[in-house]
Length: 466
Length: 60
Image 1: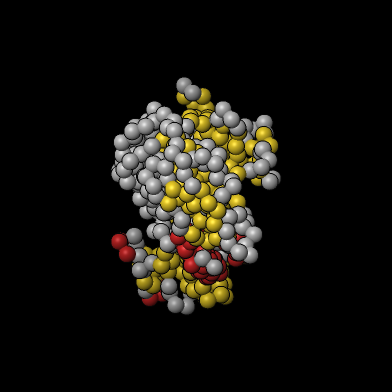
Image 2: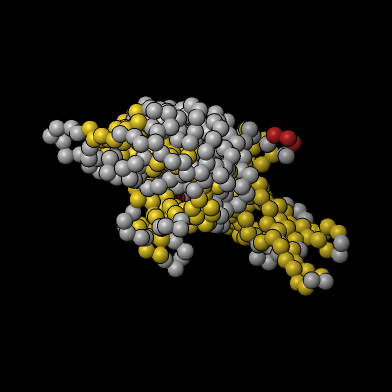
């Protein structure tokens, strides 16, 4: 029996099938149409035994099965007597690529001679067009509405690898769709094999970016087809049809549009990051340090000290003031710095604290803070400077504040600084766009693989495409 | 060359050059020290805002 048509938005291509079983054929005349001086296989004409329409066989001598383009009846023309395999009466489906249309794909002109509508038990339908060129043979044009692929049948079986994939011409194909049963839902045109609606085959697909390797097996044979994804404009240029609308999940073998861009951007970002780190080494760091030691008073009174003069010769430069108080424990030292230019009176100020605490609790010994800190002055103009330092120590003794215990504080001023915050900020600025594009690439791949039977994720991925 | 890639190249160049200039000039938006609104009065006395008192910048 001819199965029910798949539920889709297309018009019913079948009409009402009056005859599913093999029907006897009425005798029909077949005659060859030759073209003088042409080595190509000759065309052949005959009248459809069902509707009487004139059928031209493009690949005469190769074609064994043909579906009448007027009534859709499937005919067996492997013998001189045309035999009706399945009879239909109503108007055939309008195809996106009408039979007989010609187009040049990748330098070769092809003619559409056959059309198959296939599905997995009426689910996941796709269209297969059979292309013919008398000098180059047959090709397949496949689409499920998201893009077009040009396929050729392989004459040598791919090499199976232990990784559950296959190699063809040195390229590895990873499994994507597991073995499933596909059927022919609709057929039109001529074919070099016997084809009929309802015919089933086991299929499986393997992919690599831009290519798909399809395995198909039925009771008679095993076939391998290698398909290459066509650019949308290729089909537009060849057959004048609109490019696919896009949307939905990517095709199994659709290359990520972000991969190449992300790779290039990451390389460039890494070069820029290396340059930034190099600049940090070249212009960062400190020089000409001057140090003084302040003895903290035990009565909590602020101690003061001056370091200088410090000659800054560059128009603008950074200054680093660091302090160390290695003797403090459970104590802190408040520090106030004034960097004063002797002639102009310009004052730069900063404050900091050195603090260190330790103790013992139920989890054992603990400590926090450190015995050092540093403050950095930005874009200090050239001049002769003095650094005024105020230091006041305090400690936490028996649950309350107390004056310091008289530790020493070493204060050092030096020209220059390394602003690690600048470094991190700059690295973020150059890496973020590249990482963003890379993230989009990973997201694309995740969505593409979500449709796979191997290692895929959620099949209910949303339809928002980038 | 891809336009987006070209623009990203320009962006990297700007960031790297800006970072180099900032490093050379010792600029950082995250620096601890800042120019004070304090004024130095007669005799080198620094008058800090907010009542922090006076400091002798010259004779400490």
